[in-house]
Image 1: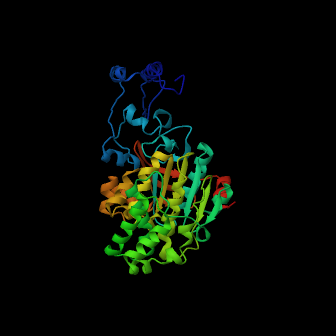
Image 2 (image 1 turned 90 degrees about the vertical axis):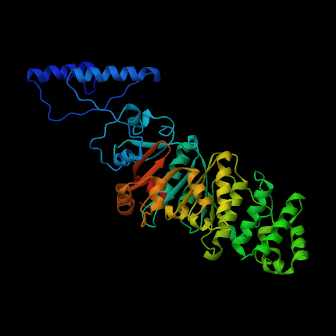
Image 3 (image 1 turned 180 degrees about the vertical axis):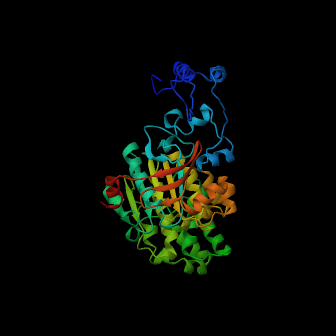
Length: 434
């Protein structure tokens, strides 16, 4: 043929060469794409199919909108699957709207087609992300690299809640300042402006619950005192007097916030957290890590609402405790209206399938990236509509293999096995490795 491009003229030439014995076909297949207004596409498609059949070319078209066909496709089992143009456009970056935006950050390649995946999360219905998988299979490195790429591509601010000290290197290389929460002064009782009065009361109670084992009667006293404090715009001293007058026993139980080691979190000023910030919690005892993580999230969200921001929370399972997860869910709901994308990292999707609040968090995340899972439960299979092939992929294949990583990427408009790898320069910036 006179060109590698498939045209009607080339098809005619190919047919003539075959008829004259000048060429022979061992095997031939091709995909076709039709451009035009929506109302015209159906007619154009029918005309093309009619012509192709006339010259002896078999044409089949099937959508893969249902989960069964989708799973076969992204698992690499493509035998007998034929795609119409709209379906094919899900796999080809330049043909499908905002998800594959060339102005977005490069996330890797579709492992099935080799197509590059560019992602501009700010254009998704909800820009939050879950990155889930076992320790040691590449999820932390994936987050570090993609956050670096988004910073370069989109200029976003980066905030990190770092319980294990995992993100110190990349934060330093990106010029982020590190904050030691254990030696800071702040005021956790100050109202968060974008929350309602009840939400502020619940937020404050959740912080106290992470520190003290409080029963219903004790919570009732604190609920009344905190509500009255906020209603009347009173100070921390008002709450102190209120609790002491109502129940000396409750006062004694939570006395560390009034007169002890946690008083510094109640009487200071809340610092501004603008720019790139990493909150280092690596020295915090695990027993009180939920308190410090929730307090960190609280502090960072107070500064939200300016520049587009990615807020990374590592070891997010610490915030999924029954009395704490409601606060996380609340911030996930509010963050999307403040230009903040929350990226939650945890060791298993099963961590989020245990309560209504954590399920709500999953449903409010448009981006799910699944690495290796030791257990793929029925709840996971039902939530993500996995078949046996994809369940096996998550148990046995997903993760880092020494050269690159593979993960199951699920978004509103694309589900595929993502192949992720880094350049030498990126590895140095992210992990300091040459």
